[in-house]
Amino acid sequence: MAEEWRLVDTGLCDAFHNMALDEAIVVARSKNLVPNTLRFFRWQPSAVSIGYFQSMEEEVDTLACDRRGIGYVRRRTGGGAVYHDTDGELTYSLIIDENHALISEDFQKTYETLCSGLVLGLSRLGVPAEFKPINDITVQGRKISGNAQTRGMNVVHQHGTILRKVDPALMFTLLKVPNEKIRDKLIRSVQERVTSIEMLLKKEVSFDDLKGALSSGFEEAFKVKLVEGETLEFEEQLAAKLKAEKYGTRQWNFKR
Amino acid sequence: MGRAEYKVEGGKLIKVQLSRKGNLIEAIKITGDFFLHPEELIEDLELKLAGHPLDEKALIRLMKTLVEKKKATLLGASPEDFAKCIMMAGGDGG
Image (tube, rainbow over all chains, first blue to last red; front, side):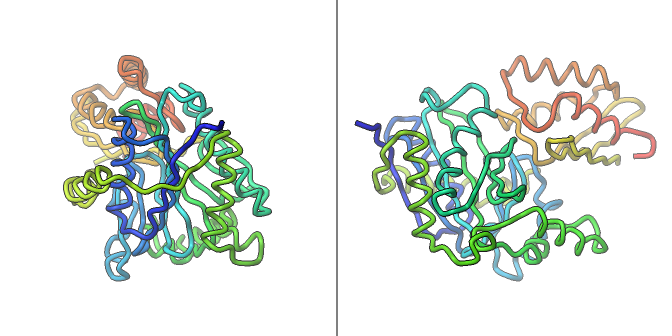
């Protein structure tokens, strides 16, 4: 019988809660309270997340975000700034015991292995995706998914985004640009380098269909069975604490 | 205050902001979209670099030693890339 993993869909939450819950699941996994987990989630309000090493002031136009009611948060993972549009993208997290056979000591290899589930899932929708090192998934050379991984507490945590629809002009009103003169150029360059499911299939794919396809992709790639479950009380309580003491604080979000 | 940005070919972007005192780094902040595990090592590294000479080879050695000692992993940028960006930020034009 295939190994069983938990599938949780935590729906629409704000940026602080989303990042806090990811860490709470990592802690729960490290204490063996929960099995390996695939989580799907979305962001409401829409939000920008930045990589652990990025500077909030340098990357994000926080005033523009505030004016539009858009959130911003620092991730526990490295990588770049991402705009998580409520309707434009789906985010997933994988939380896996570091000793699992899928996990290599080599981060690059592990990215490829874990992303293979997304690649298969996207191909089921008719999107000919491929993994592109270091941490991207592309279609015909254009990025459709970015992913970030970290380890700690003997747990591997990878989260990433899949673009359903993309609006580069909005992205660059929220992200800082080095100077106004090159804003249009940056927007055009993103239009050339990024794609979305809607652009490729010329139709909208519902979140349920997208999650269904990705779930089967992960099951097939990892040879596991995903069992729908709920988050534990422990995870919810820890998430609330991490939101209050870490992800929701200025100290964390502006620390670099 | 010296600043530099360095995009690693096929890799990530490193940004360095530093103040210098003679040939020494006084204070430094390294940001960017690279990956370093464990993440908190960046703060250790910045502290270690304060007071360190602006010498590319010595900077590479310091970073390599730290990565080895802490069993850390760098993705998208190497110790050489960081050293190069630090030297650029410390340059007289910076």
